Amino acid sequence: MNAEEIPDLELGKAAEHMVVADLILSGYRAYLTEQGLPYDVVVDHEGNLYRVQVKASRCAKRMPQRAIHTPGYLYNVRRAGKGGRRKYADDEFDIVALVAMDVRIVAYLPFKGLQTIWLRPPGHRGSARTERTHTIDQFPIETVMAVLTGRRPVLSPKVRAVRVVPRDQACLFEIA
Picture 1 (cartoon, helix red, strand yellow):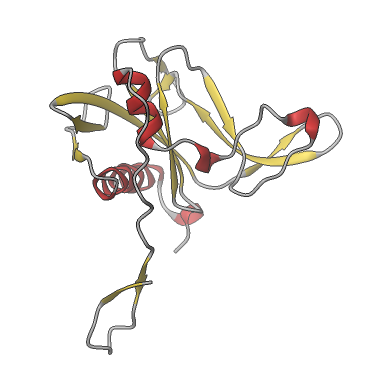
Picture 2: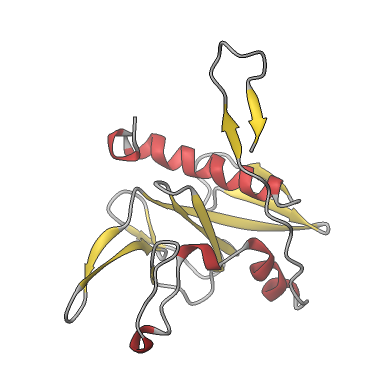
């Protein structure tokens, strides 16, 4: 089953779990929250709790540009609920986690002042005229924590990918 076939609610839950897993694998304590809160995840960093709102995109979509169509992930980070019925206030959460479900990558940004974010797929190479565009893999959690704490970022080493091994083998998971 791919991301296009999953109902919206299930996709959102999967994205929340992906963010928690990414944070834990990056060395943070992270927890899912209850339904009805304006944030989805809480992350503990050096004894301080930060509220994280998770936004998911199923796949990169073609975004119209002047001359060509370029793929990108579009996130309306200011809107809440199905169809964006409600607007978030600046103090409802601290961090927004943008999840690209098709490539399973999470981008983290401080929430203050954000409206709509468009990020390009990993490896996208823009022209000299598009130097301000960013790819979704350019926003690690360490950078946000540095902004929120006022300290220089310390990037954690990337965790090696986990590859699922067929059930008939003795080992269920193997580090690639």
